[in-house]
Amino acid sequence: MAGLYAWKFGLPVSSFIAAMNSNNSLGDFVKDGTFSPGPFVRTKSPVLDVRIPSNLSRLASFYGEAPAVMRNMVYPASIDDELTLQTIESVWKKYRQRIDPHTAVAFAAAERTVAEQKWKGHTHTVVLAPMHYAKEADLVQRATGEKISIPERFRHIGRRADPRRRYSPAA
Image 1: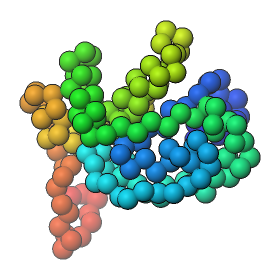
Image 2: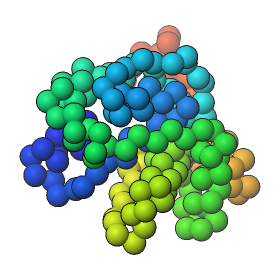
Image 3: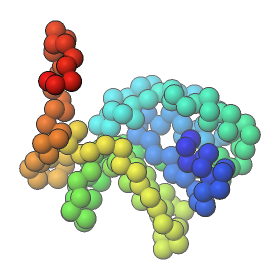
Image 4: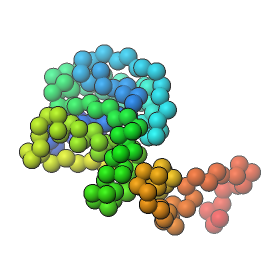
């Protein structure tokens, strides 16, 4: 949604790729304006496990205002868990970069859409990484076969807070 608003106010882009996991709640909506969420699927990219997006009303408003833009500029792509894991592995092997499963969904969606639209060599594609791979270190380690060393600043990830402990800025 932020990208569409930026385009509306002058960002020089020609298209957007709406990357989704198997829940794919917006794919049909982008194509024809109808929203019918399917059954919930738990995936390896849990941040994307959404049936009803929080920005649906804004998307519906934009769609109502500019349906041709939504159909001709926004390309939905649904990526399953198998391709998500393959993408984590292939990005590691090709670029020596570790990526989290959410970034892998976006990366795979970008690769697929560029290939399907035959944009290869005629476009620049930007993939945004929503989180650090350390958040899903076990999964990334299994996908790449490489031991993950979690940076010190992320060592707290995964620890549960003690509800009896009071907040103290010095702690």
